Amino acid sequence: MTIITRMTSFGANNWIARPLSNVGTGLARSRMVFKPVVPAAGKTTAEKTTTSHDTINVMTYNILAQKYAQSGWHNYCPSRHIRWDYRKALLLEELEAYCSDIICLQEVEAEVFSRELQPWLAERGYQGHYLARHHGENVQRLLLAAVTHLFWNPAFPDVKSFQAAVLCQEMATFLQRHARGGNGSGPAGGGGVVEVPVEEVPVVLAGDFNSLSHKRVPDVFDPKIPRGPDGLVSGVYTLLTRGSLPTDHPDHPASRRRLGETSNLDFRGLDLTTAGLRLASAYCLANGREPPLTTRTATFAGCLDYIFVSPQHFDVTSTLDFPYDLPLGSYDTVRDPLSDVKFPPIPNGAFPSDHLSLVALLKFKRSDDGM
Picture: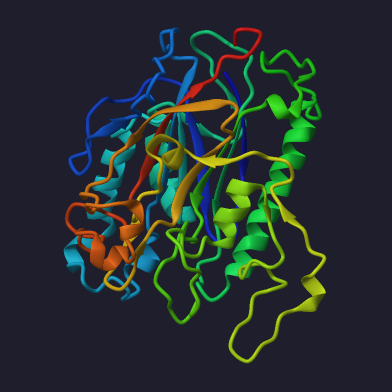
């Protein structure tokens, strides 16, 4: 398999990797369960047996930079559990346990990466940037994978929406250039030109998007929440799952108002789109809903982390379960995950970051040529 990777960063350090050999099969002590997707009524499981070259395992994880861990925001966590040596042991245990093909990390400090993570991952066959799989069958398949960490401040969802649109445009441009042989190299490594229609290249976009899929409780940032089970769907989530963001959405730069401001008419003609990329959340595809939370601190809980995939290219066969029980009742009964979901603030003795890792097992859909 040949993989096109693209590292995209907005104010944070990210890293994306692909293993070139098998890694350990141990299980992290904190999370062990992969939840298989239950086939819909009347549907049967795939006829073709899953093999190593038609599935990929994608992981995204905001590992919490040590400078933020020690900033005082996590003073509920005992100091011994904040120390990097303690957190690193748990982080590496998770990275090895889930045996992912693609790892998307956020908040990776440069020194930590170069001195500790990179050598550890290299020993297990991981490499960054543009690379090819050198063992097993070469299926001549391209893949665009990207990792991002959008702006953190909840007062600026319009900035996040703009960042997401720019990211998609850059991904589309990168895809058009490389899928059509702009780099002059082929998947077999012989210097040939790759001629693949861009719409046929599978896409994975993962990371910490700092954006809720749904907000149901008004707050100082969004004092008015639309009625209905979905509440307010963030601009970033709307953009990425629907392909565009209407200018009248409250998170569009043309509509966003902060205290003492009026709408900015200069942005009325600003089209925010995914530049033709079709994306869907892997967890939503698998489970019919996003998880209530992927991050939990003393004052906030919510779903900020996602693995987006091109649904025309992938089936989601399973997802890593979360270490908490879902509240009883329908999805819209989870109004505030901070109070509705029984899960302690993290990091703590069992969880090394203030975010939980997400892992999705993806299977390539069969195309007309049998690939």
